Image (cartoon, rainbow, N blue to C red; front, side):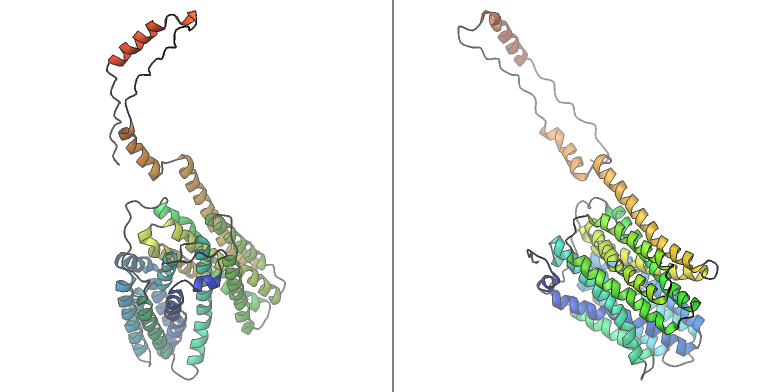
Length: 467
């Protein structure tokens, strides 16, 4: 169920049968992830009156959401999206409603709110990885699949920008807990429409053999995703410190970070439109290198507007790096683990984001600001180096190291194809041949005698453990 246009485009992606309906419902459900975090933060702060409690609740909510995502994604691969995704969304929505009820008014014990937030995060359905795995089934043309992934990444970027803005408008005339209820409604309604799409199938069949690389092939995209998350979360805090140190109005900081998001959206669209010749793992390393170098150079900006331009340039590498990481994970993962592979990349980005903010907070005030920018960019550079070394090692193994699965199969079938060699007959010329061949009858008798002797049986190779 795919299209194979001569010139793939974003319009061709949306012309794939059932793509618009499925993609729109997935985006509706994923908008919940753009609204819930800010709504939970505002609601818990208003209910408990403590930033420390709200920070702890948000940390617990984020930890259970991120670190349990690969496990939830494995349930999608095992039981199918239709059977596993809707129960997750329903349970997640119900727990969000309970959290909204607990934080609606002051006076509820903080541990009870924390338990509700942690349980809700543990049930968050992996809609992003599921949609990306579905793209690889809808679209079989690799060039068109690249555009589908880029479109998905840019749309997700816009969701995380528009979600907090929607909550900001909502809390202007309603309690903050209303934003949590809105997130519950979006996730349940969007997922309900998503799983009714005709392209949603049952569990993926388990192949007899995994793709070459297996789990090890996920290390490059996971490493780069973690490095990108580390760099970006650190930059958000460093931009605030830059504005404060240079006596700029901190109200301008959202505009600087908005340039980062705008650059990411433009970079994602351009990345999807280019017909790349280099392999995905090579592009992944170069995107991470570009991101790290621009962030490191941004610390030398003489003013806020120069920093804004540098952030726009850095953003141009974000969506391409993450899109390529998802694409490489899809190429590397076995067919029955595509959702889980995408979830590992997603979890790495979020885990890196959590660690980057903590590291930047510890370094600020102890090191000069340009050095902090250089260290934030260095996180992306180190991840690119790790991904490049891993990819080079995998290439060496594939070329001359461990035998590939096809070679092993050929070696196993070799004894069955071996045949006993036949004696070569000796043909004599008609009378009149040169005198130097007068001894040919002797050669003929020797050949006949050799043919009458039994040939030795072929040696059987010793049995191996993997036979």
